[in-house]
Length: 173
Image 1 (tube, rainbow, N blue to C red):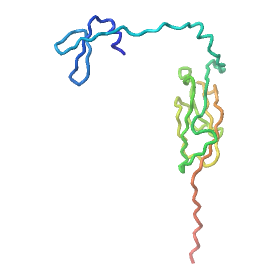
Image 2 (cartoon, rainbow, N blue to C red):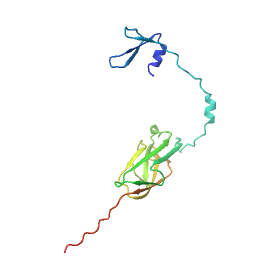
Image 3 (cartoon, rainbow, N blue to C red):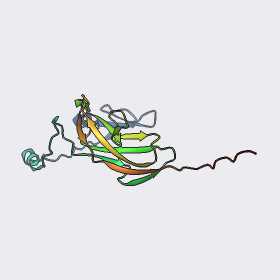
Image 4 (cartoon, rainbow, N blue to C red):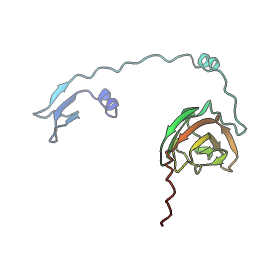
């Protein structure tokens, strides 16, 4: 893509194999070079910008003026059952458009109403040693002062961890 504009503006273009089994392009002929024909690039006329901008539905803005059209926890699925004896839970969050990092926005995940991760810019999280039982996850976008900008709908999941009951040892006689 980078050589495209150069090739289009050159009068004659030559191609030859380089020493590392690659291909070199040049505007200078050499004994090993093959002259190639460069065709004009395909173009399409632009659309009516005024018409396009009025046809889009408006997205309500958050109190900080930033709009997120979608914020949701996609993994684990709502009402899903996980089986992990170590209590490891992978969490994925979808946010559209992308997180407004330049405005100081950060994303965190809450587990049962408590922060389960540090605020950051990642949309994938690992929660360690989660207790067995039913839990609620929620994704929250925070601004630079720590105020909530947007919250996802909560997602419930059930974590099963194997539990082995060891019998009490018999007293020695």
